[in-house]
Amino acid sequence: MTVPDWLQTRGGALKAGVRPETTFVVLEGTPQYKLEVRPAAGTFACAVSNTVNGKRLDDPKATYADAAGALAGGLEQLRNALGW
Image 1 (cartoon, one colour):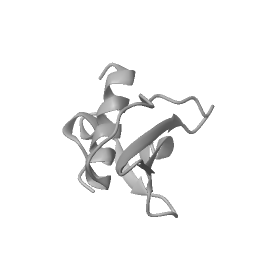
Image 2 (cartoon, rainbow, N blue to C red):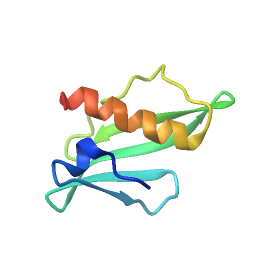
Image 3 (tube, rainbow, N blue to C red):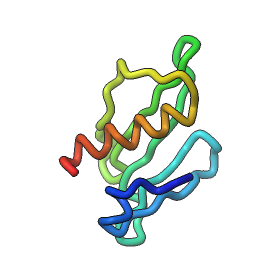
């Protein structure tokens, strides 16, 4: 997993979850956001949520060709939602 520049600039990191489809965005040593890559009718989607309150930050209609693309797309959706 490559940490995007916009996240590294803010001291963030990515950490794999217990399940292979889950990735956490860690800020200040604490997992703040959860990204879950999910199958979606022959494509993939990425559910992005806040770990503190469970609020969803992703576009539920966005789909991607593969799991890696879904994770990258989910990170981009998070970046946009945070205004970074």
